[in-house]
Image (tube, rainbow, N blue to C red; front, side, top):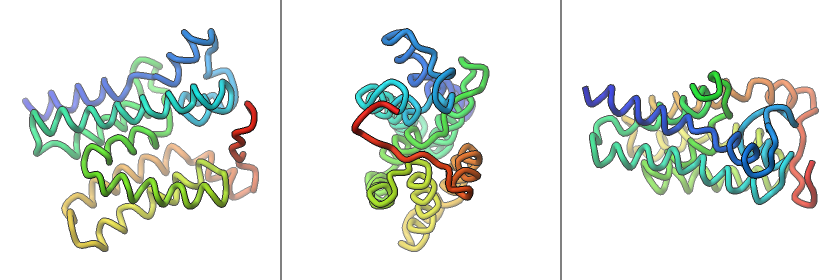
Length: 196
């Protein structure tokens, strides 16, 4: 029973589409019709602006963080499952006919809730790659691919690695179009000087 409860609240919390709601009700814009059509923070940043993009990023991360912290208090044996369901909710939200974001921000929040050092590893790798490339998708992919390997190599929390690999597989799957564009040299870079 607890497993079902954890799965449901984590999914429905993760599924809250802040990347759709904020542009829709603050800027009267359906972000799904602009840019990449994605409801994640990167597309919001590109088509609405830096501040809305950052707000969506923080709120999407909070979904994952709150899900994990609720489960930590309620049923800690399911904490990694809770993170997984929050990420699934973000990527396939029932509220938007299962068409959601790519899961990076929510995964960041999940990792922050699970272990602060997980969060630090992910952010450091992401920022290093982003500083050189200014490509969010590439930075996200390299950081999530590296992350389970880093956790495994430390020899701590090894039991968490299979679930962390699942998080990674979801993000890679959600970035499959980005991977194609990266291979073709067509992936867009982020500029903070103006809306794109």
